[in-house]
Image (tube, rainbow, N blue to C red; front, side, top):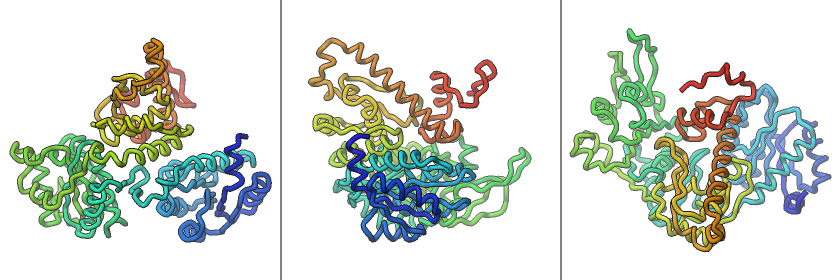
Length: 490
């Protein structure tokens, strides 16, 4: 075993939450062999108190009783106290279906009984070594605020600190708020932070993309529908589901005019008629709206009702693009690197001063999405991926998770181009990117049990794109029938 693991074993403080004598004996024997500093508590409440107020452990191992789901929710709270704390859950076979939910809530791993002692040791060694790679400067930074399992708010630059103050004030007001900014700048994160900071945080938050659905589906998504002759069953829309909570309407200018009338009624009188019924529905829901468009122009072009615009724009937050808050880049680079390395099970890469300087010089038209895509490629192939200009991965649809990265600053001083091996290196790079893409798809499919729609949501690509990629890479589920008996549906 390498020296880095050995160092981790000498200094690690492992907190175990369990009442299982067998599991505790296993870990105790591992402690004798590994020189861990082992601590033990019998309840999650003791663990939360220890993590919050005492000297925090290096890693937490949480034993989940059979049929218990409360432990999953405690992971969320533990992550709030210590965002970088590795949390490994131990469960029973009948609860193995909770693994995906546990990972989404922030657990690093989910071990299912029965397992051999060496398997437990291997898992602990792996996550302790991963934790040792975390940069404490950003894990403990007060400027990073977790918003959900997949998003965070960074308030380093003066403009973002100002936005954080605006969010704190408006969170308590309960009024509609308009959030403006470029694609990928973090408008949804600001909306979620406002919800999380308000008295409505204990209730539902939902986002509805007004540009992603045709008018009839968008109406049902927002306002629900009653039973009708077409066989549609009565169902509630997001405005009812999020009662006492928050609804974010993304790309508000794409909301059809007839639905804008209904939305004005909701904002004005807090009730509406569910389509297909004559009974008014009362709702207490906070409405937030976001847009990348010029709203004054949308009003003049009759794409946005004037009365709706004035009701929404009384309180407006402008989220600046990444190029206007570049002081956040070093922190964002390290954060994305840590998150992606842990997700793909790869070793983190450091960013050289030249790479950071080049990132500072780039304009990042795709904002945070583009930055995350760049870090993903850098994680896989390192600086050789940055040696040539105009290297842009193929994007399928505007909702693709990875935006293109283009910069000539990385070409300077790179040996590959000097040696005349540009085409060969490009071919190698193309193969590396394809392999990384295939591994990412395989990991998502495995995590979702080969539920392709769920995997597409996890990868943040369209369902059709994922089907195309599965066919392109000839990927098959472990229990798939032979190809001549399969039909790939579009």
